[in-house]
Length: 153
Length: 164
Image (cartoon, rainbow over all chains, first blue to last red; front, side):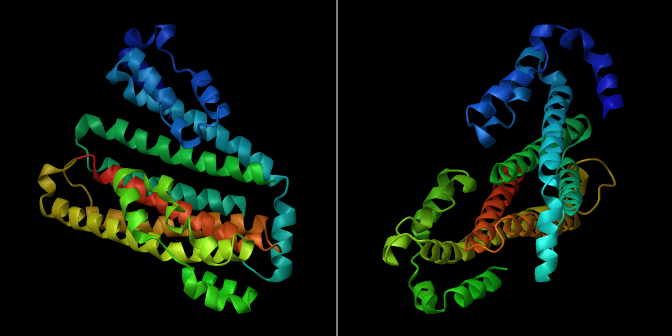
């Protein structure tokens, strides 16, 4: 991902170099703080694209994907604190208990299958941005689901 | 899953079996809603009057109302998925005009994706249910999770399918 981003940046660097067009985490943070929830998905990439142009689609979507991926890691860390208690309770009752790692694995399998399916429907140069758009949206939705579970704590 | 949850609810609230049969779902409203809005925003619109019909809002009536709406969502997802399969068959039959050469079967890719989604949904909603385990809200949490994820999957399929 980082290698790809660096490579892409090298190709369209002059267009993207302007700080005014850089990806803005603050837009996403503000949207989520205002309770935007799923409405916030794509806000950062859209603003980035408006500044940098459609040629930067892969980079802008990739930046937002990184944002949501980081958010997943933060939420998982918070949930892991209570995981032993939850799994222990399930074991006492003899019921199958999905762990956070199992959820992460099943999400990754689903995300990859969904985005491979979607990307395969697009020709040539469109494949990368479409796949990244798919990855970003699914990652964002999963991050919001995990955020809600943290809110349940 | 819906059947299992309905049975679980019935076991918890044995006198409520009649309630389950009486739980009304406004399928016209659901259908109208999903034709104009994201499926996610329509969850629950079919059971807005349901608790009142069961004697007022309570955890029990809410559970029965949720269970009553779930089959509609499962059927709607099935319809959208079936439409997706039909489209994928057309793509496979005319693969030269879609994507890169040598692309794998679109039907198989869609099926793999859907199977992976079922596994993800079960893991995620099983986890969510566990957070509330021991309380009357655990079954409700599970049903709300399954319905919400089903609606999300409908929206994703619709989004992907509407792009071409």
